[in-house]
Image (spheres, rainbow, N blue to C red):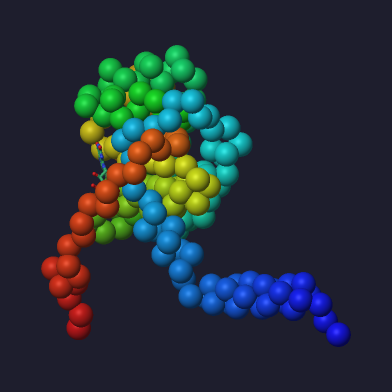
Amino acid sequence: MRTKYQVALRSLWAVVFILLLSSCGSGSTFDQLVASRRSVRSYDATKTITEDEVRTLIATAQEAPSWANVQGTRYYVVMSAEKRAALAPVMGNNAQNIKDVPVVLVTTFVQRQSGFFNDEPSNELGDTWGAFDNGLSNAFLILKAKDMGFDTLIMGLRDAEGLRRILGIPSYETVTSVIALGYGAGNPARPTRKDLSEIVKFF
Ligand SMILES: Cc1cc2nc3c(=O)[nH]c(=O)nc-3n(C[C@H](O)[C@H](O)[C@H](O)COP(=O)(O)O)c2cc1C
């Protein structure tokens, strides 16, 4: 004869099992991750991120596809308070957005690799394929960051030459975005998205 306790425990396990089954393959975890990511413009200055955590993020970003697997994206990871302060003057209005973040990542791509064959562009998009690959790897990076409990902000408004000077970025790399990485303070609203009918044509 089973005790009430055993019956309750069995029911609990059954509920856990059903919940696990219902989450398998439904895509809900991925959808929740995507829905929870926001561009965050204020951060908790008391929380830090480790170099190992940044390495984990970049390793995931490396899994993104790239033209002929050239993996042209490069990362300049700014973690010291001194270097972070040095970035403020070259970030324009975005300086306000990075003042409390523990990590700032500057991403670049190596020129004339992606979209190139024998140092010749393979098609009319020329050396813009590097930015395409860079965007893909950054997309992986910001989603992995959210998965690890961090928040991010991609910033395109920045002084590329200033960043080049401060971080010693070589002339054969093109500076793309700056990414703030930290623990968000506050809950930004989701900017609305266009209706699919405005952006898709099915044939
Ligand atoms: C390439 C790119 C450049 C951006 N540049 C800036 C920027 O300089 N400053 C800023 O505050 N947000 C910037 N953003 C963030 C966008 O404004 C934001 O992604 C958009 O409003 C949608 O909001 P969500 O990311 O919360 O969905 C940029 C985003 C991208 C992808």
